Image (tube, rainbow, N blue to C red; front, side, top):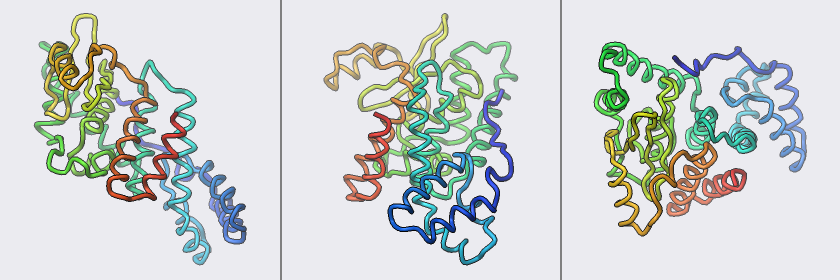
Length: 294
């Protein structure tokens, strides 16, 4: 049932190897430092905590020095792995979506743990699967959607953050899993990632102003709005929403965006939020990320 288990080898590179890189970093000039930081970023897989890797350095002075570069290493690691996602640009599935949103979350939540995020998503999927098993005699497509929403919205309490909509934490998956509050896009991503584990035919619906989901089988089609509790939404309602906001395009035009398209929308949201907050450091980080995605 589950796509990801969050398991991995204890350390991706040896303590000796990482020490050698950080010794180079300590005694390098400015330009050389950038090259070494990027080399380290490429060496540490995206599922690993940079802090845990640095904590394996035996020399306490070097270990303390190395911690000063954790953020810089992580940002370059994000750029590196997002570029790889962009190269593949999977349109037929969302197999890279979890990696992408985790990497984006690591910019706003530097101490994020992939294993904890993955374990939480697995736990949510298991709760939904239990309901599927209990209701297997009536398990139609619409029942599956209702049970998914029952777990995520009614039982777990995931909801739209209407009172503090512009809080950047609403866009970071790690914070959404903790606060249980998000915006349409982040909550839709949550549903997608749980749905992937359950092999549900869920897709993004990249509507202007309000991201939603689309569920499609040969016998059943419906839009879903995770921001409002996972309610089912008819096509005509979506068409009227688009028309009322100046868009004459039919809803189907916005269905099934690629992983890259979803990540671009998430990054664009964060750029606008940080720009309005005049947090130019974060704004510039995400501007560079958007350039990579384009």
